[in-house]
Image (cartoon, rainbow, N blue to C red; front, side, top):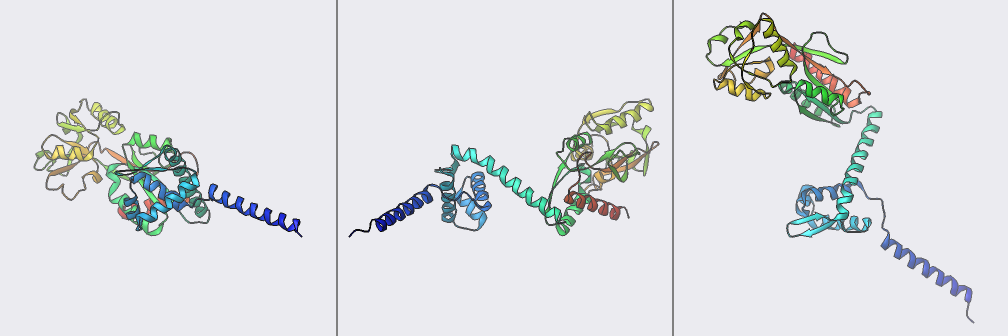
Length: 329
């Protein structure tokens, strides 16, 4: 006699198992590990399975298998294989920016969590004057790596007004720049005062003494920063007060360009002590401090005018202040 109840049960079990098998093939797990997504971006950026495998110390076949799992999870091909490597498909082009944004958000989330626990982590973006790069920033970088391994510095060089714009638009977290008035602005910390030097080619008579009067600059062929520039405005105003205008033969924002032109005998320039403290310069350049008036630039550290500082940013601020104290002592 046929046991219809048992037959129904067996049929139902078979259907359930078949459905589970079909679903497992059609809908793989959507929980992609971050490592798989990072691999996807690495292959997309290099355009090569071989290079991606070499960078990770694994085999090309392993990379190919991981991408295959990722493609099945996405429901379509992410890469087209070409004669020179791989290129993103239309699906891959749509997926890549979203993966990149998701990974960045995930990194920031964990950085915020670790900061809550009292560990400085994350990126600190600095805007600096080229003349402050060494020894200040190089020393800060070395100490940050030692004390705060979770902190990454991103350093951009620019001129004063440009750095201020970066700070106001939140493109940087911290600025080191010149101010031209002794009274600090709100949010500024005075680091040091920098005298101004007339820089000439080696052997020129005007810079043989330790100092030179500002009035002696009248008629000299000068290499000065491009306008607009607060530093240039200050120099022009000082000249006007003494009833002369600079004989500007070249405008250049690059300190290295200014130094090279002067060393080649093309004229004179006005620089701070950090901009002329280079090992190779004594044999090619000669300097004298400008006096009457004693024109000084005030090197300041400027913080954002809106929003709290991250723990990582506070750590870098403390390092800057520490290094400056040592350099001044």
